[in-house]
Image (cartoon, rainbow, N blue to C red; front, top):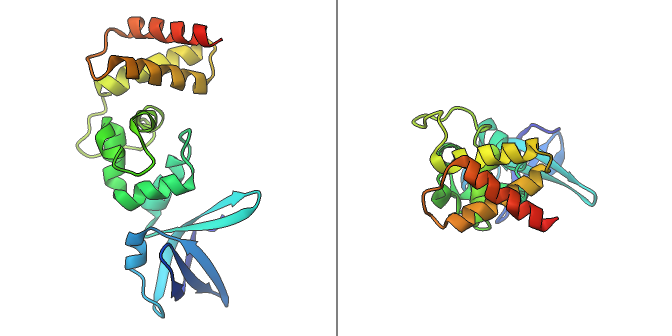
Length: 199
């Protein structure tokens, strides 16, 4: 993997920078915030992540290693590809994103184009325990993330796939419509009922 590039900035475009490394110009996809800090002809160092597809090799660039690490973590959530992960980092700084995921702040997450309410809930559900310690956020799960995590784990333990469990939890969350959730066993029974009908 290409973890970083350092060299002279040869060109800038609306979403890419060309950095010359050892006589080779590497095209690096960057957020507007990162591009704003670069100057043609000046030396630059970018933390990078190489995304390999069947028909392409795309190098994404970041101001620091922390942003790159979060970019890669975001893509482990279902439904999140490199473009959406980078869009999240274009809207929010890494510490803001981590705090939103850790605290179950779906309002902040839905400010990212392409992330709706369900997508934000899924990010919280799948990544909350993996974003690392966040200053000012208690280790205890917020109510909304807490029951969702417990129900999901129970469903997986009962034999459903993580994807099926996530879908059921999202439907149960939708049915609550912002109301305080009942006890976890009640929610689990509701989720099992939904999965039973889907079979």
